[in-house]
Length: 527
Ligand code: FCB
Image (cartoon, rainbow, N blue to C red):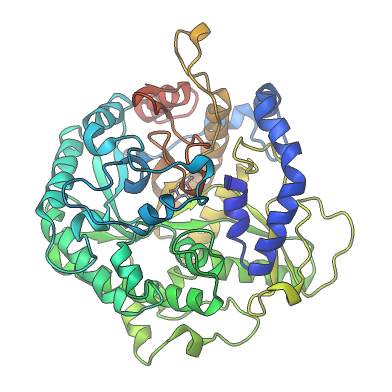
């Protein structure tokens, strides 16, 4: 499943997801022609003006506040390998990757980038590139192999050494507590729909803060909680591969409870801790100016972007549904509003691409201008709660992963979040693009990934504009430090600013990485 389909599966409705998949099959020859077989086409498309692009003069003028935290992000399962070393337990992603037919190319992450052993090399690259922040995640089954009980000292020691090495390199450690690798033993106890997991998760987060909280001050409990709940339990695209809307609603509610409980557990164990988030977000634009489409875009925002944010800030669910919020199905109990509500210290979110959204109940007219996914057959699994259809448009150029490049999206997202939540401190926890450039002997082994540089120049200029307009953004983490195991896409996508040769694990910093290092050093884009 490529990135386009990954996001297709993330559409707010099961019905839309099914249709997106069908439409993608129809569309894929065109997009792969553009992106992979003729890379010069995309290359060219990103160099000059393209729909939504930022003029060079604006890029040259873009500024960032003093002390801005330039960073790179990774996730344990995607880079570490060592899947059963030093007492680590099995995770749901181990089980998934060891099941025939789940991952592109039958790839596993048993070795991945071998960062469990090679992390000193990774940190040396961060230092070479003048990075100020590294967002990484901790593998729950390394710390608690079965998800509960006493911690595994070898797991804790590993991350303790890792954090020390970051600090020694002058880099802020930003810890994501959960980036998708649930201990399989907890899935066997019912997984996220089982509300007991909120307590288990808080225990795990508390253990981390107790052992590492003297050195880690920045924590995000969940990476992309919506994706965990929806792709894991709603659409079934990701492990544990359940497709049941009620399981999705219950999983999401447990995660909301877990977010609140872990916030308190981390703070109780470490007085230095600040706790925020790492949500996945896409700005949603209504398909037409009609009231119905504008309302559908708002439901998308409520459901996909702030479903775990408003619960934390206000202790209540945002209005994501066309029917009253289905509290009973979620397993909501009186008092849960108090458990969910926590004053996040800062807000973190990712930006990759945008969505065009319309009301699923209004008949579609011609000239949709996006993927042909904009019909919803409610008889075939349509979502009667949200009634929206979201598509990824193709107006801007596409990455090799099939995502539309739309620099303005980050401006719109950041300014909206700033406005709606009273100018919070913001961290961009991820943003990036998959391009398949490889080392080229004609370039002395360099990786000339000009399209990635163009992508970040454009996007960061838009981020700078949001900051100039008052948003309090203090950090940006490019995804990713390394090419890595891209979930169900295996190794067929390359998001890294460093190339990894999986035959010998050799790391080669790409041209984009060298450029990003100069940006971090100079605090501007024209370098
Ligand atoms: C994000 C995930 C990250 C990686 C990038 C490409 O949604 O958080 O692990 O897969 O996408």
